[in-house]
Structure formats: structure tokens, C-alpha cells
Image 1 (tube, rainbow, N blue to C red):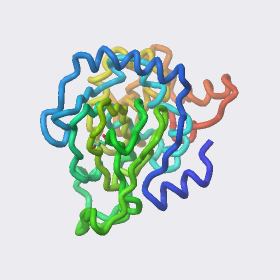
Image 2 (cartoon, rainbow, N blue to C red):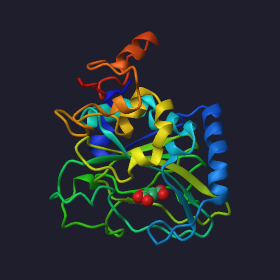
Image 3 (spheres, rainbow, N blue to C red):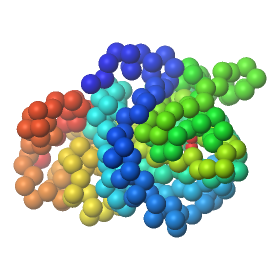
Length: 282
Ligand SMILES: O=C(O)CCC(=O)C(=O)O
């Protein structure tokens, strides 16, 4: 499902935007599940989270409509090419910029991994527009090509080109964990809501402890989402529990070597996005 253009844009600019991927029904279900979370959701605790923003983490532990975007086939088809098999869901949060929110500091998303730069990203982020993203309401701002910068270079808005990711609700930005970006300032009277699932290499620690955040609800998710949460192994044994595959904890039918995703894909007549998912033995 990924075409070369998606990959080329991502490699050249450090990001690619897929417009209007969500159906009206999918967007509606996600908004319905967000409403109670945002009704009580706290505001940010620091300037980075945003004093005039709401952030709620661990979304797969709160409602299952969010899985629609976490395992969206168009996005996963690209991620399958960018990250190693059995890559993980590192973070999954809603960010709701309220009127009056100021611009975030410029940053990269995987700078906390203590590895020298320039380097390939350890993570790939996505930002799904749940409201329309406009120049006024704080559309994410990106510096094309900055994913190739070394550690010595920081953003200079006088010299660097800034792109505002203006896009309709239901669209998504897929961007390198090494790309400089920030949330914009919300100068509108409305909200600018997004959901941001971030994915990391299967050997890296996830930002959120997804297994604890999701708990027993993991049972009801698809094999692919279970793998993303951490019910997966980075060969030969990273992620094991008592020397065995972690799926044994939640799937009584688990059989060593079984590849449920491929089986499901064949049954559904769909083959996309199986490349990034491997079910290892035991
Ligand atoms: O809200 C946005 O547009 C970007 C947020 C972001 O980059 C972050 O919090 O890491």
C-alpha cells in the first residue's frame, strides 16, 4: 500500500502528509470517545505540554476506537519500511490546544535516546488532525530536511524554512523522530485537537509503559496492536516473559511459531502491512 512517492517525500523532507485518511464515521467515533476524556482532561504541567493544552496519555487503555489510527494500514505500510519488524507503540496521546496556547519550543521527538547525531531516527511520529489544522489554530510546524542535521545545529527561524501542516481533520503527518518541529500557537477561538501515536524500534524503550497503560484491555485488540503494545519479541529474546513469548499471558490459544496476522490477512483477502510484523516461536 505504500508507494514510492510516500517514501521519497519522507526521506527528502523528514515527513509526509496523508490527507483525509479517516472516514466520517471513524472520525465521529474517535471524537465521541475523546469527548469524556477532554471534559475532565488536565491541562499541561509545563510549557512543553502546554499550559493551555490538554493532554491525555495511554489512549488504548481508555477506548478502542483509537486503534483505528494506531494500526491504520496506510501509515503502517510506510512504517514497515522505516522500522525493524515488531516495532512498538512508544506513545499514544491526545493533544488539544485551547485558544491562547503559545507555540511550543522547537524539538526532535527521539532526542532522549543517548545516541550521537546525525543518526537514523529511533522513532517515527504521527500526528492525526482531529480538528482541521489551520495557520491560526496552531497547525504543527515543521522544518523540512532538518532530520539530517547533526547535534550542533538548532533551528533559526530567520534562516530555516518553516512549513505549517495545514490539513483537514482526518489527515495525518508521519515524521522522523529526528525532525525539528513544534506545536504552533492557537490564535483562533476554537480548539486544535490531534492524536499522536509514536512508534519506536523494537529494541528501544517505549516512552509510555504501554503494557501497564493498556492492562487487560489488550486482549480485545488485533494481533497487530498487541504486537505494537509489547506482546512481541525482538529476536532473539528481547521482550520475553519467563523465557517465553509474552502473548502466552493473554492468548490461551497461542501456539509457538503461529503467525496470526498473516492468517487473518489471508482470510480477509488483504496482505498489506504484514511485513513489519513477525510472530516468533515460543
Ligand atoms: O501539538 C503538536 O502539533 C506537536 C506536539 C509535539 O511535537 C510534542 O508534544 O512532542
